[in-house]
Image (cartoon, rainbow, N blue to C red; front, side, top):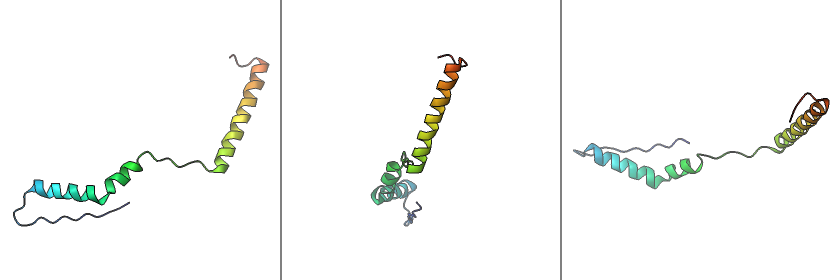
Length: 75
């Protein structure tokens, strides 16, 4: 998401007031809230990926029990 915020310095306005003006524009624009809201967003896995991972877990479980029965793995 790219958003341009343009602030112009008027006359002999000091740097702190320009910075304050910029901060106010960012806060009122709602950009910061959007970024913070999406910060830890994770998409859900697709149905195909979920099914594949379940099948892989089943295969690994079967292989583990087979090796355990053969005595090659200790619990």
